[in-house]
Length: 168
Image 1 (tube, rainbow, N blue to C red):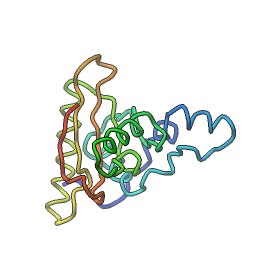
Image 2 (image 1 turned 45 degrees about the vertical axis):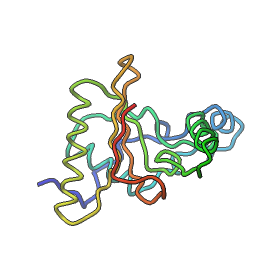
Image 3 (image 1 turned 90 degrees about the vertical axis):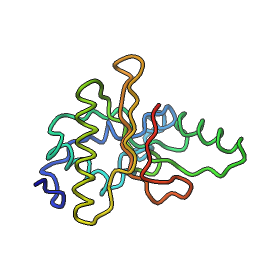
Image 4 (image 1 turned 135 degrees about the vertical axis):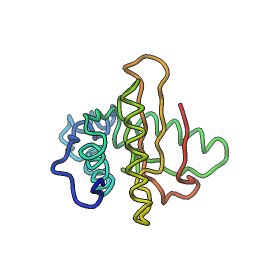
């Protein structure tokens, strides 16, 4: 049985890979604003679940291609404009809420990671606990180095039903 309650033996994700990588945050950090787009914006319980999956279920590296995203990040500002132009209310997604990462992965490893995340969720359901990962969404087209799986845990945002699946 997989232990889903005790902390992982270590943190497998660096602040550098989890921080916002947009030019606004990079420039701000260069100017001495250490907290600009900081990885400290990631929710601790979400990271605890990721670390347990990494250590106890998947048991392989999980390289983050995108972690926290600030409101100035191109993806977030594009999505916000698109939603507001449609006359709808913007609700932040997983990344700006600190409960979303994209893991750079492809092929059979992507299949094993998706299965691992579902198994981890299943163990939570067996203990009558909420699923920590409410979005497990593959992007497996295009160049190999551009492929990823989005892992999200945002279940409190109105207008974003969860659990949910989408593809890119």
